Every structure is written in structure tokens, then in C-alpha cells.
Image (cartoon, rainbow, N blue to C red):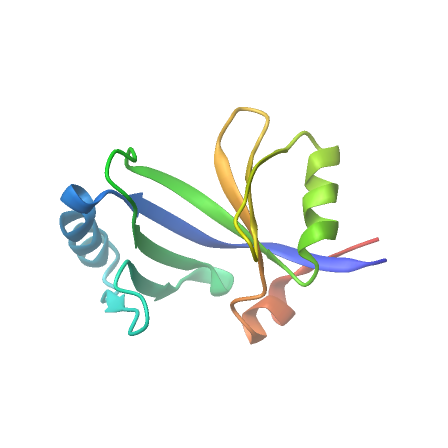
Length: 128
């Protein structure tokens, strides 16, 4: 069954001791104010950039190294995970509503449901 997906969100994963400084740095570096998520204190958004690509800052747990990861958003998580596995991705963790995977080089990324609404509709790629 056909589905759609797109690379949609770049997340800066920062442990507590680096979170505030990293969030503030990237806000100043991009000129985008950091808007805290009112429902989850671990998240802040720097908003939308070119083609609706979002930059988010996420507070991770103690001991997690600072890193970047991307989210692939899709209207069919299982179909997209299967498509990416055929390309060499490996499932790392079932996170409930989304999957954490690694690419062939071991880089972490997530496959999530649609999160950007109209931007998804405008920029997603259709897959057979």
C-alpha cells in the first residue's frame, strides 16, 4: 500500500547539564526564539526553517551523549520502517507510537507519525 514520508525534524539531544546552554546557543545562532513546549518541559522548538524543516531541542537523560538525530515523519510508520530496513536501517527500539532506528553507519534516527500538518502534505514523498 502506498504511503508518504519526509525528513522533517532535526533534534538536538542534550543531557540536562548541556540543555539550557545548547538551546540558548542554537536559538541565538539561528535567530529563532526557543519556544518551550507547554506540555513537556524536556522540549523546546526553534520552529520551521526551509521547506518546513523543524529544529527542536530535547532534554535527554543523564549519561546520554549530546548528539543530533533526525525524525522521518510518515503517514504509515510500519510501512516506512519496512522501506528503510530494505535500504539498510536496523530497528533499535520500539518507542510505542514510533520507532528508533539506526542507519547503516549506526546513526540514530526515528520514524514518527505526521507532526507538521500542512508542511507534511506539501513536502512529503509518495512511495509505492
